[in-house]
Amino acid sequence: MSAAILSGKEISQKILEELKKEVAFLKEKGITPGLAVIRVGDDPASIAYVNGKKKDAEKIGIKSYEHILPASTSQDKLCALIDNLNSDVNIHGILVQLPLPSHIEEQAIIERISPDKDVDGFHPINVGKMVIGQDAFLPCTPFGIIKMLEYAGIESKGKHTVIIGRSNIVGKPIANLMMQKRNPGNSTVTVCHTATPNVSDYTLQADILIVAAGRPCVVNADMVKPGAVVIDVGINRIEDKEHPRGYRLVGDVDYDSVSKKASWITPVPGGVGLMTRAMLMYNTVLAVKKANS
Ligand code: GUN
Image (cartoon, rainbow, N blue to C red; front, side):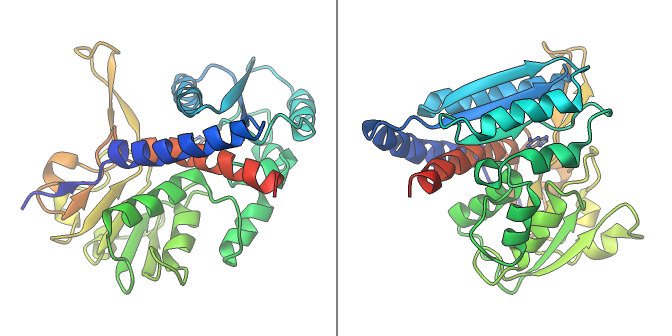
C-alpha cells in the first residue's frame, strides 16, 4: 500500500485564497491588517521562516512590519519594542521568532505581548483558554494539523492519537486539541517524549501518529501500524553538498519506508510547515476581526 499525500501546499493555498478575500473586504472598509515580525539574531532557519511569513502576508494583502535586531539586543530593548507595538493601532498581530538568544528570557517576552495581538497563541492567557475550550488564538502548528485533518476528512473521533514530543509549541497543544470534545479531536491521546521507554510500543497502537521530536528519522516503518495517518512536524537540515543550498530538508519520519505502510502521510517540505504559515495569517485576520468587533 502507498499512502495518500496530505499536502500542506494544497490545503494552505486554499486557506490563503479564502483569507485574501477577507483581507480585501477589510481593506474596502479602510482596515489594513498589520503583522509585526521580530527576529533577533541571524539564525539561518529563523531567517528562512521569517521570510516565508513575510511572503505569505504580502501575497494576501497583510502589511508586514519587519524588525530585525542584533543578537546582542537586551531584554529591556526587546520589551520596549513590544510595548510600542502593543499600543500601535496599525499592528494587529505580533510575532517574535523563537528561539531567542540565551541571554533573553523567552517566557518573559511571550508574556509581554498583548494576548489580543498574540497571533502565535503562546501567551498563557491564550494557552489557558485553549485548554478549557474557550475562544483563543490557537498556536499555528497544532492549528494547522487540525485544519489538515479537517480538509482531508480524516476522522479522529474514537481513534488513538499518539504524539511524539512534549514542547509548548507543538506537543502539549496538539495533545490538548486532539482530545477536546469537538472534531477533529475527540480522540484518545498518548504523549511520548524523551523519557518514554520503548516508544514503538505506543506508536504501533496509533491510528494517528504526530511526530514532533525535532530529530530526523525518529520513526521508521517498523514503528507504524498499517493504515495509520502519519503527521510529520519535523523540519531538519541535513548537509547535502550536491544540493544547491548545501543542505536538504527532512522530517522526523523516514518518509520512504513509512509512506509504504501509512494511509496518509505529510511530506517534508510541503507539509505541516506551510500550514503553520497559513494559520499565522488566519490568526492575524482573526485579530483584526476581534479588534473591530
Ligand atoms: N519557532 C519555531 N516555530 C515557531 C512558531 O510557530 N512561532 C514562533 N514565533 N517561533 C517559532
